[in-house]
Length: 170
Image 1 (cartoon, rainbow, N blue to C red):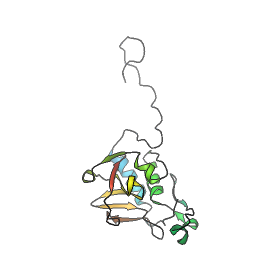
Image 2 (image 1 turned 120 degrees about the horizontal axis):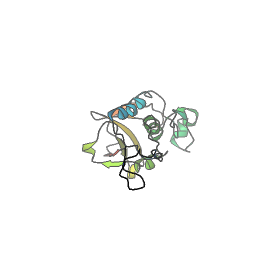
Image 3 (image 1 turned 30 degrees about the vertical axis):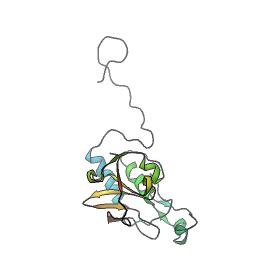
Image 4 (image 1 turned 90 degrees about the vertical axis):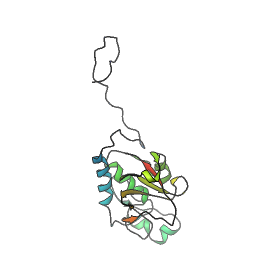
């Protein structure tokens, strides 16, 4: 029951139906169960090939050409994930629809101090999160789709010595 709607009788009535959550926003349920869904969905893809431009809310997809490193690794012939595709897939399981690129995902949540990161938070590397994103697991580890020629993996937080930024979606 919510606040009265219309009139002045003071009689509570049911809240109207919730509005749909636009892409890149978070439904207000930071429950541990939702974090578990995100983490477990990402972990279920460990061992899947990296594919530049690969992955969506449904799972791994064929990579695309980039004219460089990804092409040399044949990513366009692989079914897999890039870093943002893995994150999109994991969060879709918890009902959070995210934009496709790492830098767009970076602006979809709330920045938190790295020292306050929690399981399920996203860690970003590069200016405005533009280079890489991974899902924090706790204990200094992430699950990530790291780069062409690699597989989705669990790894320590250490990416070329660059300090990550933390963003919370749940």
